[in-house]
Image (cartoon, rainbow, N blue to C red; front, side, top):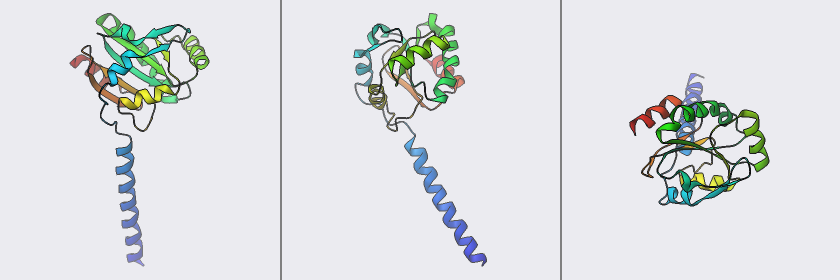
Length: 173
């Protein structure tokens, strides 16, 4: 009887290990595609107010590009911290940009309700493809990209941001 239990436990541990390995691997960002920053800077997207914005207007700044959606609880949870980050560092050549993978009306209503002080751009499902170019192969949200003022991707973050880590990464630039 003990051998059966021991065999069952061993098999369970094996499958748990395999699951953890593939689960962790799946949610690790892939390498950033060549030309991802150029494609981002060449993009023109509507903002929450309905105006058209060209991302090249922020070229030369350190960018914190946050892919998010109104229906994503971790995305919504981290937004007050991103607002505080923009308020703290906006005068120091740092710009937070939110790229919404959602409908224009949802993003507009969200922006008005929550008083987001950094630009929220509407990408819809095209935003998912744009985030994939930055290594977000799983399409998970939130997904954030730190781009240095030189236009090079410095870091990518999948899932809810650790703002202390992001601030440390910004300080190292």
